[in-house]
Image (cartoon, rainbow, N blue to C red; front, side, top):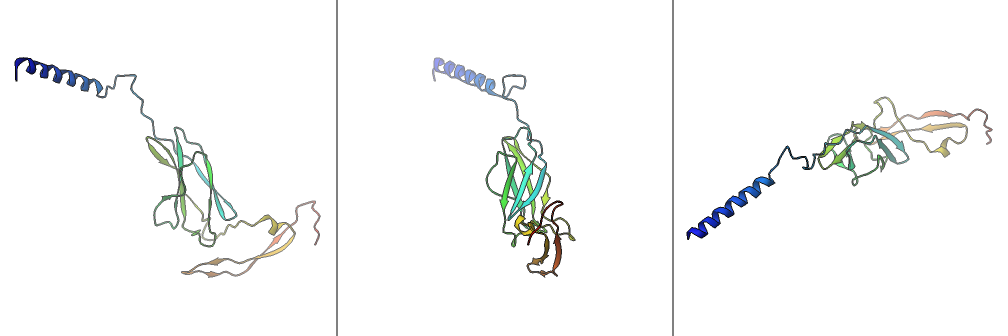
Length: 177
């Protein structure tokens, strides 16, 4: 190696080192891209429709999208139901007779490039002593009585006793049969 090529190599090495150090993180550089905080946690609520669950949640700050997660039996873990969402509500179609009403759990996650934050967990069970049902308007359009029977699949399931309930006409309404 000649003295000229040696000095050229040294100059190249110094220039490269200076360029690399200029590219390193500089915490005092105000032109650096600010970090994005993870989104705030949304508040999730659950409603019921005919063969569907209706989810609504509060808008979370710094969010690019939401993910609805379900744990269908309460033990298998949460997985995403559907794709990413940009609204603060969605519905999930269910097979009512196959849905594990007592154990299914749901959360929604607010996400951005920094990560995701989960909401509160909701479930479809009201209590072990109470049943919630969605009854179509046509079934309660006329005053009278109706009978309800519940079937729970095995293990330990079966058909319940019949419960009769009364449909009352609204005040001032004329009922004809």
